[in-house]
Length: 375
Ligand code: AMP
Ligand code: MG
Image 1 (tube, rainbow, N blue to C red):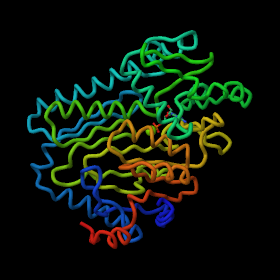
Image 2: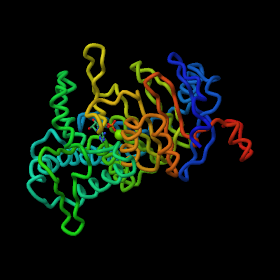
Image 3: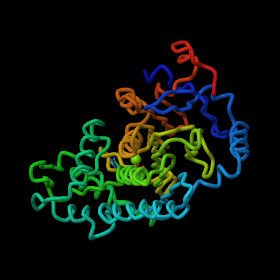
């Protein structure tokens, strides 16, 4: 139960924490947290030192590249002994990101998403199968989260411009708020069409599309014959296999200290997404206006600093990280505990860290399974 392990972490705002509990997850092996209080920056330094002691040629074959696409940093890293082949595969991944951006960007007037926003309130319009499936998945996330995840947040959300420090007035918010409701988006399987029930409704796939792009990127690496690799789009990553018989060390960023790590997770063969209020924001009169919007208020969510979800695919973890950010620790962990194969770490607006029972400390697991000593 989620309640059993809540608040167990004496999360220090100053020191990084590390995970190292052995834990079987989604068919892969994860190392998860234990004895957080014993682990600090020294352990992190040790891990980095050990990694640096790996044989040179092992590290040298990891092909790495990154680009700025979809308004974020896209990175690939994978094992491929043929450098030319690796380059070709990476380009295919980047091209896929460009393709998805062209289809789903709310900022590109020619994107299919913009077309939907312009036309769907006038009547049902036929859409691509890909768009239909992602809209369907988005609506199912809305059902699952009781409306916390809602792509129609954009009916108000579009009035914010974080880069330029622009926000809607209270009056504007109240006027557009009734347009936020995922029930306004009606899909028709037979005609593969979408319509909005009223004018003023807008959708935005920013909470799910990067994860979808990451999944497609991993599918491309698989089709290239790659066995071990990582694709990242902003806060969304998916790991294929492991990193040469070792897990990938994935850090959850400290939400209030740029470049500091709050927690390390050794992960293999899984997806991980983090939603944070530090990604796109501005501060006015001491108040933070950021990009994750409560569908109930049309305003930035204030309960959470960051929400991280670990699960089998990045489309799901992306949507769930945004969902958990909106729900906050209590309702968020309740939701996660009801789903199998998914775990979460939430840092609330007081800097308190919460995590799901799949990330329980070792004592509980050791008692049940006999496992205990860290690997
Ligand atoms: P993420 O990048 O996964 O942290 O999600 C943040 C993005 O999701 C924002 O930039 C918006 O595009 C979108 N978003 C904001 N609020 C919501 C919401 N309540 N439901 C669904 N998507 C949202
Ligand atoms: Mg997300």
